[in-house]
Image (tube, rainbow, N blue to C red; front, side, top):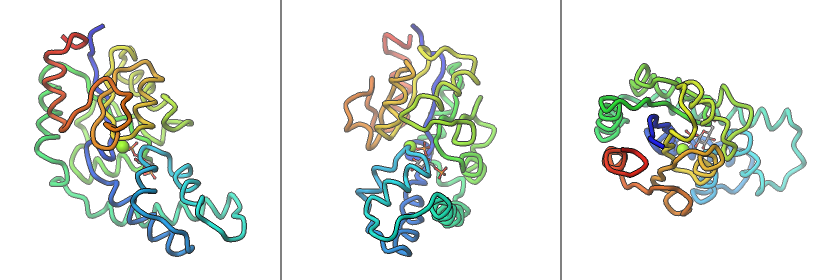
Length: 219
Ligand code: B16
Ligand code: MG
């Protein structure tokens, strides 16, 4: 069946706000004396804010935390994160990313965002990508986070496309799992290329233009 839509993860695919997630979580973790490093941070790719906190707290040895205290910690981290995001600018989106989005639109594909982040619209505004996508599905319109397919199924619904006609582009294993669970094609980039579960592995985003132009599922 022919692919007619491409759904992009945001953090780690279109922009590299993952470094800001790391810095913000690190500041919060240091404040409560929890060990946190880049390897643990890699496990947070595509994972919701509260699920990320639970992973970080695997190394917490203090008195049990209530749900309210956990919400406070997550809110504190989000405050640090948004301070860092405020520095993002249009130059934080590479020419390769802008070229790919332009080319796919010219080639007639519908394009959407499928991100776990509740900060998606803020990030898109900061980097000048607001108004570029036909639909945005993000952490504000879902109940279940990746690897549940909800965020991508909602994106397909917003685009009025069938799941089997969508290609998801992801940097996280949980995101590739979500695409597979949703019955969508998937292209892995960055960290997700290691998981071996995607239909395609790409080195840079513009590789999609070639795949969509020549592959048997796409032409
Ligand atoms: P927020 P993506 C995800 O974005 C990040 O990869 C993940 O690290 C983060 O915890 C999640 O968004 C929630 O983000 O705290 O901003 O709501 O990769 O799905 O675009
Ligand atoms: Mg991501």
